[in-house]
Length: 422
Figure (cartoon, rainbow, N blue to C red):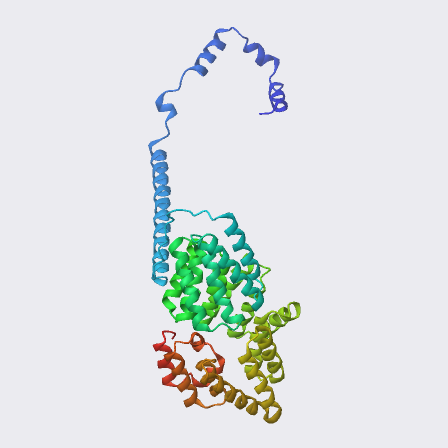
């Protein structure tokens, strides 16, 4: 109560009242004694009916709270059970670190120089990177990351230079396995092996297991997210692929190769205009980057933009230094001048078959051209040859738009199943 209200209450007493209650009088003493006497239990306890109602309310509140807790726990349990049912595959076991090898400083410097050139992704730079990684291994044979560098170099030399696929993947798998032997908990090594197992041997299950192991070991490994995205795209899981490539982009926003592969994934996902816009942006900014030219050539061929296709395919061949690809691009240009799109495809086919006979061109690519010409039987025959030869290019059989005319054929579906890709 405020002081102001206290004063007002005091002033309400009359002089007569004050005189009748003088301090020290018997009446005042009796009143004080009554006021200060302790209350009895009967006076302080509420009536039994009030107590009963309070207890009932308390029990009700406790019961409702308990029910809420039980219901919440049950909901979480059922949700977890549903998640486990959806993701029934067990997560890969995480390899245990036995010991941490400390690389020789000179070997580490060589490895870092190799990575610098590796990121440039040109034939000359990749060969420089390969030399640095080889020197790092020679300097420190127990340095696992140096073997990862070798594996990653072989992977890209197949794509960006003229190293034969069979040789590139064989060497890459050997190097990746050696890295895992030296350091089983190295995420980069499992990522490299995953890429090689799928694109080199068509081991879909083994590749996914290794990708997931890499991401468990290092959730921030941008190259694992990047290459896992290309794997997911190739097996037809484009929405997952777009999520993974976006994670990779966020982890390394300056990577041109991530952006280019995002363009290809967008195309496979049916977002062609977005894909073309992104790839042309990269092409303008980095005209010597091969992937943007290669991917645009693929899109141009499938969308009927043949003038642009001829330009992009020739530029791809020139940048990669691949004589076979250049000969095919030149034949396509001659055929287009003489006979339009049909003349272009037939000229390409003749050149491709010539290089296939020399063992310098995959049967899979010949099958693509036959399919575009509408010659299904020949296309299926070359796809079977591709499967028999274990060609890496066969990995794209489920998403390749050039093979769309074959998809309803039972032989095509059987072949995809036999290859473990359906």
